[in-house]
Amino acid sequence: MTVRAITDAIEAFAPLSIQESWDNSGLIVGSPDQEVNGVLVGFDCTPELVDEAVACGADMIVTHHPLIFGGIKKISPDDPTGLALIKAISAGVAVYAAHTTADKVLEGVSGAMARRLGLKSIEVLDKEADGVGLGAVGDLEMPMSSEEFIAFVKDRFGLTVARCSHLLDGNISRVAMCGGSGSSLISKAMEAGAQAYLCGDISYHHFFTPKNFMLIDIGHFEGEVEICQVIFSLLRKKFPTFAVRTSSKLESANPVFYY
Image (tube, rainbow, N blue to C red; front, side, top):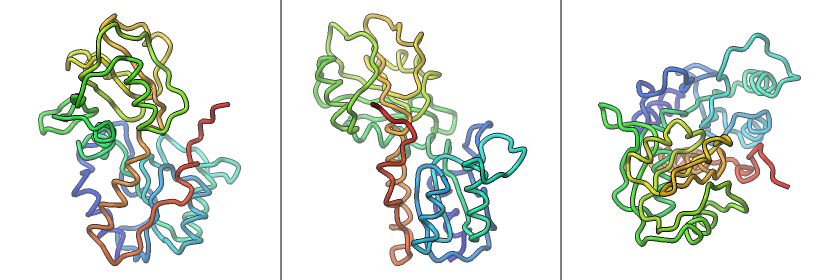
């Protein structure tokens, strides 16, 4: 198996051509012609994830977040990104990221959030000309009060806490969402008729919402992590006899802690 065979399968699902202009999805470390014997799927390419790949015999890592995102002026073992790069290159481990490519297909990040909530009539929230785009919107099976919906969201996403704007007087029946940082789509969610919008990384001032609309910040990691299972299932279906696994430490990979 080659790196190219793996990346071709991922890109048939989430093409590189649709990534945002600021993104760095794609092959970050390694050659497309490199032979691989196993793939490890994770969320962020940390030094610990590279160590896990080496330990389990995987010579390719596929993550959601790119290992190299902005400009890098030096590669040092004192920096987590630098250390991960050094470890991956030294061990001959290829590294690939499906970031906004997986964000912009409905079967990806936001669609997975919508399916977790059991929404009906799911569609892209911020649709582009070719039908892809960021976010998703859909309808609940049954309307819920704000209190019921918050409890439902916390249960479905395994949350101990959620940051919310004011509660609504009426019921919630239509919900929009965007995995990761989603404040740029708040207006799109309101335009789509949603009474509630789920995403992460919401700043203080965004919580001043109209009386018929509420925000729920479920966290960046919490909204996106299911993409790892989506990619794993994709690769297992495409290559049923090939060694593909998800990180055994995925559940503890969130860098944000609550005390």
